[in-house]
Length: 441
Ligand code: 5CA
Image: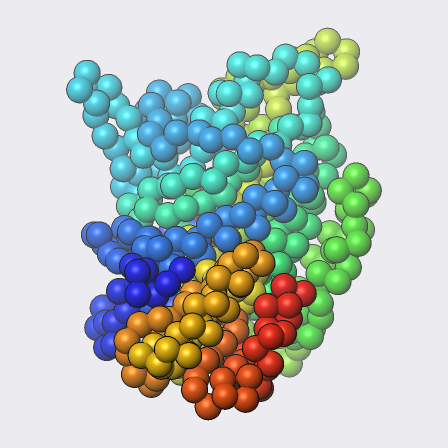
């Protein structure tokens, strides 16, 4: 993409409404714009990151055996009356009437909707287990929408729902998501710690939140110091989804980690000097709630002896749009964002320092087209701007690598390569550049 043609409205000044760094940088880097409180439009650069995050989430869901569907954003109120949650959900639910005065709502989550789909389609225990997910916009009329996409009112969530015959099967489904979540966040280079959590309006008595430690996190969290040093994923990577995951689950949940609501200082199992008290960003939350929805909604199957059994269920959420903010909280410096490669909106930035110089322009145009032909996504700064402005813009938007073409280097057949994360710079022979990045540079 040529920057001269790209819709990238950068802001020079820090927007006053943004209190935390990710919100500030998302606005400054032209990723999002606010429409109303807690509701945002995603501009081209931000939308690319959102899609990449979504794709990693999708791939790890598929790998775990979950199947993708798409349920609507607007749901009928009757569904929620069946489960008994319509009144309970309170003011967070956006309630709407259609032209026939039918009560509708903008879905804050989809337990009821998916339970009906499965209830109407599945009759026998032989059709189980099933795990269905979708990636869809949700609406919650939060009392205090803030921090940009971190606590929005409209936000993108991946939510899935598991259906099993019995508790043992349901626990295995829960454990699978426990592992899938670790893999998902690790692919984004995020260390998300699973913590015992309160189940809130979703219900049930077993749940874990996946928390990224960050000073700007909204949750107070507590964990064993050893969490900071261990690499839980190294072990999760080698597990097969069909194997018994309970030992892995026990091992890791044995290492203390709890959110504020679940942490009781008087009964905390670890000594005070081993306990870390920190702030966290909740990027995922998994729940096991058994028959909480299937019973009132009549979602039953015929069991092996012909008896009617209510489905054992769990639900599992990942805050896809919140993750974009969380990624920035975890990856930035004073100059701007530093994207991990797996979610970067472009693989690299190409800067032509002297667009008015014929040789520079020819070399930069040529490199850009070769990169494109090799399938390497580049954002090419071909604008007529000062070098300083170009460097600042490139650092702000945080692509993993920068390739800089200027008259001096070019005379020696070189370009300059800068790694955004480390600031390391090195000359590269122009001829080898494409090959280097095609090989995963
Ligand atoms: N039905 C369950 C699991 S699918 C559920 O809704 N869980 S949740 O309420 O914990 O939400 C799942 C994830 O969505 C959270 O972990 C969080 O990452 C994200 N999320 C929740 N509320 C917001 C919000 N207001 N803004 C941005 N992300 C949010």
